[in-house]
Image (tube, rainbow, N blue to C red):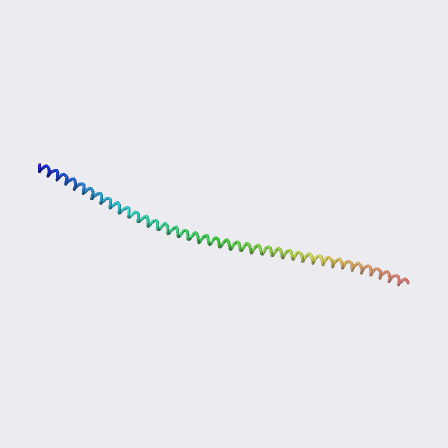
Length: 139
């Protein structure tokens, strides 16, 4: 009976040692898996940080580009306003010059009409003078 108990004890001890080794192996695998997971997590954190940095840089570039385009748009709007103002001023000047030319033409036309009337008066006066001279010669 003692030998049977001893063998049972040794078998049980063997089983416990096998279980203990299996648990140690499982623990070793779990620790190895945990280390791999931790390494992957760290790699993902690093990758996320890189992506965030790239996104921040892209956002900064985009913001800078938007500011540049906004400035360009303002500049073009100012140039357009200036061109409009020059165009309006030019139209006003042309209108004023046209009005001045019309006045000059009217004045010239009036002066020409006055000269025609004076010429007609001189012609009549000359004819009358010629008739008077002819009458004087006959008398």
